[in-house]
Length: 372
Image (cartoon, rainbow, N blue to C red; front, side, top):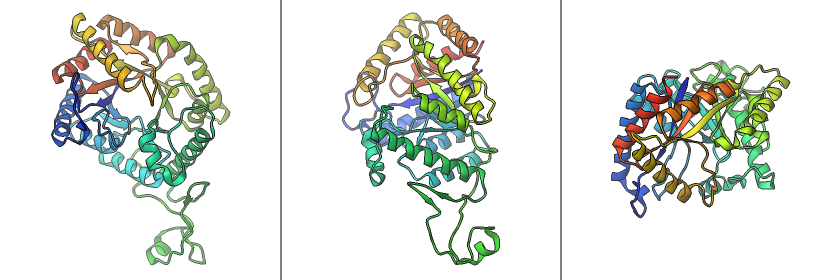
């Protein structure tokens, strides 16, 4: 089995009240050192991967995950084999050509240790600011006009990324992007070495990125998932793997998800297994003893209800991996057998609890789950 750590960073420790902690350079440097130490330790324990969400403008110091690709490179520099990725990069309010280039570069810099994750964005403060030029912001899957526009941009941008990754040169005439934009291009090297990139009238016809990904055809693709069947069908067609943090109480929904994924994959000629479709996520709250575990769970719930299960997110807490080593081992083993999956993502704070507590949480989970 594989265990990937979804790092949720904090520049404010539990119980602190600090103004604009995200702007504090000293706190940021402390977090960098904490993260490096924890991921090196996690690799020694047998964890397979590291990833972050994408957020911007988090001046409060809560989840300051500006540019996960830089964090990926930082972690990759200080580890030997740990995979690095994102869960995920926003694919609605960005330049998809530049994002395709950046992930491909990272794939080469890490000798193929990269996995790619994409999301539609869940934070209107920065998605609305970044997406103002195309009138796109974050939305819920509510089938509203804003949701439909967000999804349309997402689909087109993924098409652009995928074609740039898999084809030497390409041309896309989309609703939001013309790739390439109609341009006169008189450049002798393109005429000599650019294949069919220029028409007879010197109009640029196709473009490509440098480099294309190290992995063939491209890094594995993941996407966070809650409950949208349209999302399930999309990634079934495209070969993406969904990561679900639903609670044990909502597990009855997952067989329907997996059945729909397999059906849609088969419709487009893809053979898939449950393990191709789904990874299970949970929140790491396991301490070294019952008292510490109880305290961690209390601190986690304080934070989650303050910053997540509240506006603008209103996200239910999902699955907790705590209680005891035996409880964690039983739950991981049960889901492995129930869903026939072997990959698990751990939501893990860095910087919220004391460093030695967070390090111990990684060790306690490894002792429980990695013995299966």
